[in-house]
Length: 83
Image 1 (cartoon, helix red, strand yellow):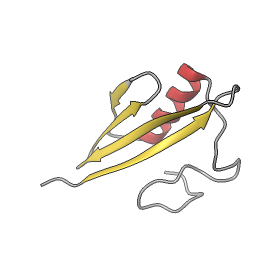
Image 2: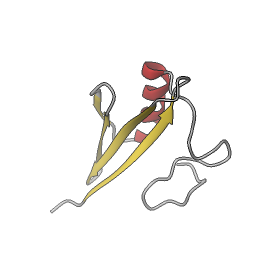
Image 3: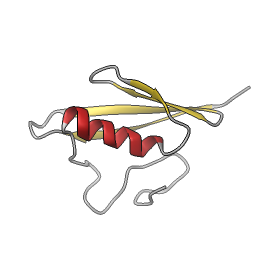
């Protein structure tokens, strides 16, 4: 049986609204889904980067709540490290 693991990427837009993209992992396949617009996409490689790109392009949400020097927290990886 495959283990399911989830994480999220969240950013704020210039109006202070939060936008969230969830990354769900089942085996080696990852699915990314936007809470704001319902956009979905399969992404085997670099799903967090694709989530960040969607937030920036579709919602102009680029403010990282973790701060300028810290990266998105990924399961199994420490804060501040990038894939």
